Figure 1: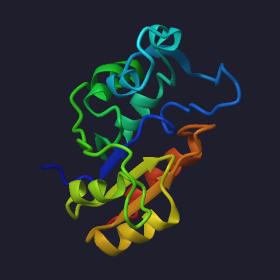
Figure 2: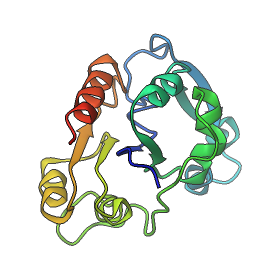
Figure 3: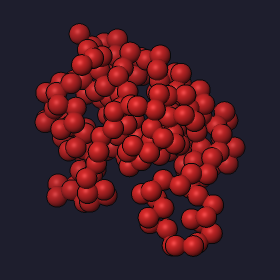
Figure 4: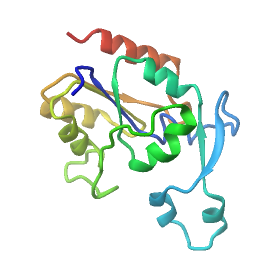
Length: 178
């Protein structure tokens, strides 16, 4: 097991700025993909299903993420498909660990983001940063109360995606660990 902290990656929002105003987000390449979770929620035979989900990815993100002092893992509804479809498009290895979420999108009885409890359990006390567009202050409080190691929940604006400011914050946080 690595001594490096975990960097838990969501796809939609941080790596795929799906709410970007401009279709040609600077440096990003648009792809049409068919992730199983998304495909299952589409009307069979629909034009939308045939075309696929539009995903904007930045080929420079992989090398930047690999240069950080973290052990990378997926924390996304794409689960193992992130290794198959996202990793090669941005230059990450196709064998990153995956948090296998159960009960996708199920409401939490205390109003937490549906991923939060499973992220804390999966990290098992290891220091981690979780980059996601949906984390809230409520999730931050829960993690600090229920996770024994250092943790940073870094909310990413889904209009911008992971950018220079966030990469800088990731570097500083890792350097500040004992």
